Amino acid sequence: MNTQNNLKYTKSHEWVRLEDDGTVTIGITQHAQELLGDMVFVETPNVGRKLKRGEECAVVESVKAAADVYAPIAGEVTAVNPELESAPEKINQDAYSAWLFKLKPENTGDLNNLLDYAAYQKLLEAEGD
Amino acid sequence: MTSPFFLRYRSVKATSLNQTHRDMNAKMVDFGGWDMPLHYGSQLDEHHRVRSGAGMFDVSHMLALDIKGETTRDFLRQLVANNVDKLTQSGKALYSCMLNPEGGVIDDLIIYFLTESHFRLVVNAGTADKDLAWMLARRDEIAPGLEIIPRRDLAMIAVQGPEARARVWQVIAGSQAETENLKLFQATFFDKYFIARTGYTGEDGFEIMLPAVDAVEFWNALHAAGVTPAGLGARDTLRLEAGMNLYGQDMDDTTNPLESGLGWTVELKSDRNFIGKQALLEKPVKQQLIGLILLDRGVLRSHQRVITRPDQNEGEITSGGFSPTLDQSIALARLPLSVSAGDEVQVVVRDKMLRAKVVKYPFVRNGKILV
Image 1 (spheres, rainbow over the protein chains, first blue to last red):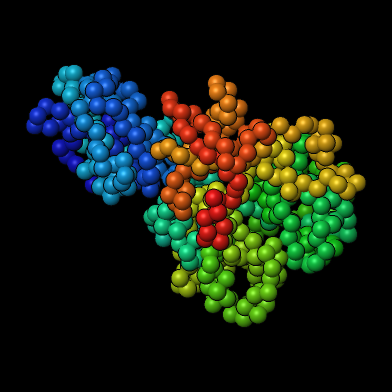
Image 2 (cartoon, each protein chain N blue to C red):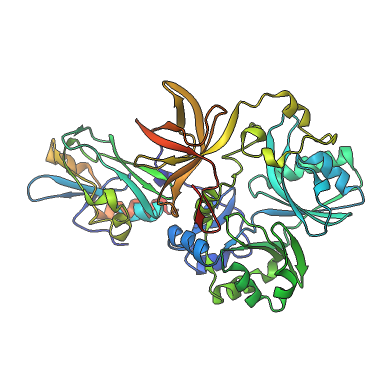
């Protein structure tokens, strides 16, 4: 599976990337997009919204189902991906470039509580049972 | 809301095409206890292929039942809400629901008339055990001599789309002459096949029953003839666009068929006394099943509340989703009788109120958008 070593992951299948400017970028994983199938609608949080860790903050909807996206860490929304409004299928095409939103973390150290690549792979294997 | 990521099922039942679906890289899911293909790569592609060409669905999880005996017709007069006396010609089919004494829908089904002592029924997969138990119990009360024979030895494949019939004729040598004059809702036996001009997509096509042991070969031959395998995902978006009810969503054993878009399948005029009739005559009809098209961005889903007047939750979406043909979200909703096509209502989608237009369904029929 095309997951990436430099990302962090959540148990709820978000990916998280720390950028050079100190913000983090968030999307859903390849595994998540495969489960959901053809994507038809994405709702992202408003820029400026302050999120708590674990808060529901976005929705991705496929033909099949709606799925909530949770804030992986606490922080303030600094940007949302404008492309997804008209082209949600970009998530199906490349889940790791079709990011949903960016956060300015309250505490960058919170990233250490997320799963690394190996731990996320283990989670997927366990869920595959 | 629960994230679907964590849903885990254990499937137990498999059709004779199960390994074939896996070999075709189907994404398999549990469907009423059956391990079935959701899609073979893209639900949307499969949907469009059925609208523009031909697609095939393994529907062997549905149950065919043969009812045999001299009093079959009389038994069915009492068992189902539609009137089997409409079936006068061998091979003709009738859509109906089977009600409980309270007027709730036990299941919706198709009844094929073959001979006076042989009718064939097709019922939904998830309700098959319940249906069979109900029928056997009623049989014992009403018509003890009848045989009710579940036909798990049969596979069922639906071939649907504007090119569907031509592709079937290509695969079943000699079948064209025998089946091209079949009207909608008619069926005939040909060789080892039972070929019915019925379906669940709003397109022309056939539903074909054949011995389960021959299903893989037939499926592969259809595939070689250019018929696209399509999964339950496409089946659901196609049937929603076609305005066809789904058991468990648009109706169930707690809902009145007259409030579920099934009034046309309930025959109340004759003096026939079918199970549930008295309850239907006594209950006032307060709601209707009608279509919605979402005007704002988003996706309508089942169980979302519909507001027809300010501050009043007066209706509910029974089936909602994205329409690939319309490229926007549509739904079937149970709303008050006062609402009519052209009205605007609001739907509660998570924390937002979205605008939707009320329309008459079907939304799509024979490839054409009707709304």
